[in-house]
Image 1 (tube, rainbow, N blue to C red):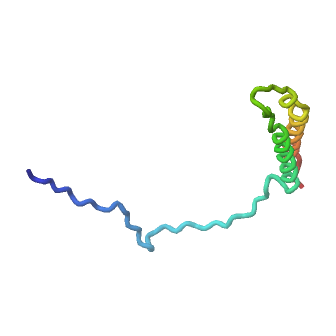
Image 2: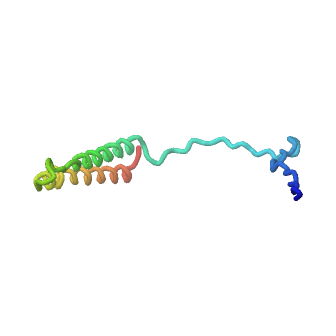
Image 3: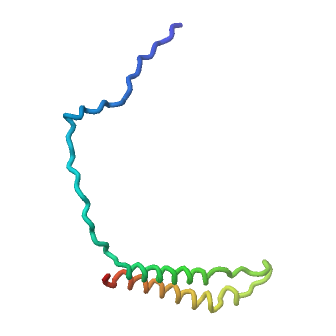
Length: 104
């Protein structure tokens, strides 16, 4: 049995071109582009998102105190069925207003 010799591998690293022949790119200075939304828009957006989060927090819970009992007043309470969706829809409305209002 003769062992086969594997050829020596060459590294796959490319050598950099000399500095004198390298192409230089022009550096452009970034100009200040005004943002689409202003501070007022972001404040309204934050208030709207806060209302949505409060609405979801109002929907939390509803666990029964015991596995063997069913109490529909815990699940179908005024807080979960009426109040929480009002907060969520109000928050979405404020977010839509924040998007469509003009920034100053």
